[in-house]
Length: 155
Ligand SMILES: C[S@@+](CC[C@H](N)C(=O)[O-])C[C@H]1O[C@@H](n2cnc3c(N)ncnc32)[C@H](O)[C@@H]1O
Image (cartoon, rainbow, N blue to C red; front, side):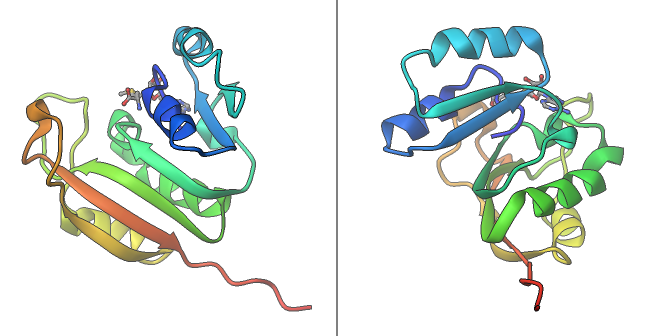
């Protein structure tokens, strides 16, 4: 999970039985908080660093209010980096705002915009209104599951 903030979702994943969870955040204070909040979960690796400089290979990456925190000129870079970090058939899933906001951030967007951004490098499995958003975000979020398009190089 990039831009994991306080790490609530990482705790949830660990409690659901995920054995290898990695979180990364660029803000030292957020990382310090995560280290406190997640100290009992050995299956969670906490990294302080820049998502865009991170290397690794993941089966699943979760998006939760990280994309919307980034300046919109970083969106293409985000899509490219996600594609690089995912293993073959890897999934990027989570929530994106489906509305624009008068005052930024968060930076919003639309279904059409996301289709334009992601379709070349990802197969769009699901991109639909979220039915179980938290109350303050009700009607404003899209739930999505995108599978990376990646071919294995032939020898
Ligand atoms: C809106 S917060 C979301 C926190 C968390 N996902 C949540 O829902 O509580 C965005 C987070 O992204 C982090 N962030 C912003 N740019 C980043 C980058 N380039 N690499 C890693 N983390 C970054 C910020 O430090 C912040 O904690």
